[in-house]
Image 1 (cartoon, rainbow, N blue to C red):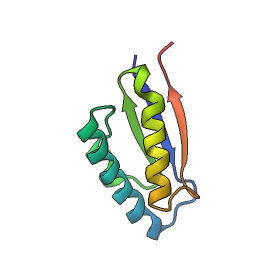
Image 2 (cartoon, one colour; image 1 turned 90 degrees about the horizontal axis):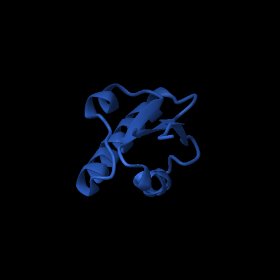
Image 3 (cartoon, helix red, strand yellow; image 1 turned 60 degrees about the vertical axis):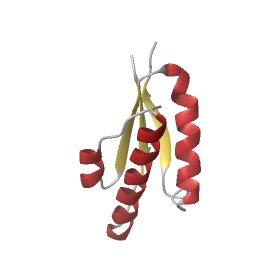
Image 4 (cartoon, rainbow, N blue to C red; image 1 turned 30 degrees about the horizontal axis):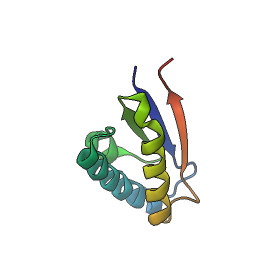
Length: 90
């Protein structure tokens, strides 16, 4: 069973939505290049305060979390973005 990670941006403003979508596109590219997880570009294009990432293999969850945290920090979104596991393999 895959693990779903949520990146929430509570209280995001109209100006931040553009940054969130850019972050989602960058994350999509990074995940596509390494094959660790997936994020839907269709969902990124309409995102306002949440991005969902699906990690098919449990062994990659921590690696994907570390990548997301690093990218949030690099794009100065670490103060407004929160990463959480929504579901994971039992």
